Image (cartoon, rainbow, N blue to C red; front, top):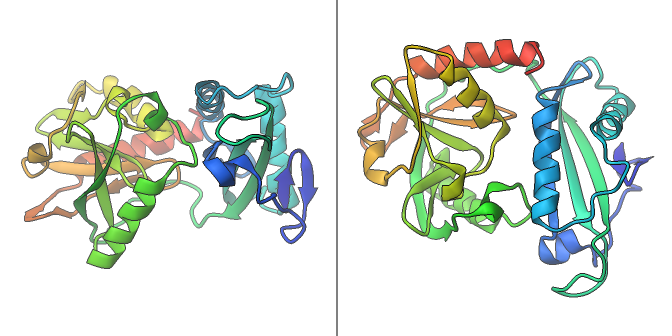
Length: 282
């Protein structure tokens, strides 16, 4: 079942027009949400990021788009797909309504939500070998537009094709200043000694939900110090650990970048703390 503008429809009945602005111009934002046994993980952070993204895109936020209303829309969809006792992944997309070319005729919005079952209720650390490389064919620009989850993901798509063609599990994206910004599907963290470092949102990094949770976790651990600072590609091979974060996987340790192989001690420690926070509802 699909939720299209508040209506539950069978997948085969749910459709969007070819004039949909999300398709035609990428005039759309979305949230990827983890739902465990009918409970949305880190819902408050998702909600406020969605609202911020819509404001950045100058969309008209409907009066009924309260946290309670959208939460109910998501949970109803999960139940309609008989996943209320299972881990699930929900994609909630908001698009500006049809009309106009680059200049929209309206700022009003529509929305669509879909759901798929996940394998694990909570985050687990994969032992699979995970190799990454830099993607240098295209860059993303620093600034607010890069920090939101919009449908403009050409760099991520092309980087994913590059990774697949060259046998990498993932790639790191650079901004116009040649600083490392993020991975193709999540935020990047670097560990060197007792310092945990991640690029700032101002560099063009996605304002990730799991990123935010980990920043809060690390700030409370005396053994580590936290830096939100630009990362040069030259720092990567000097790191003790690299790991990637997103709301579906949690934490993905990097095994190898070029000739350097990495440990995963800090990633394991943080993953256990992230699971505790998820169980407590953030």
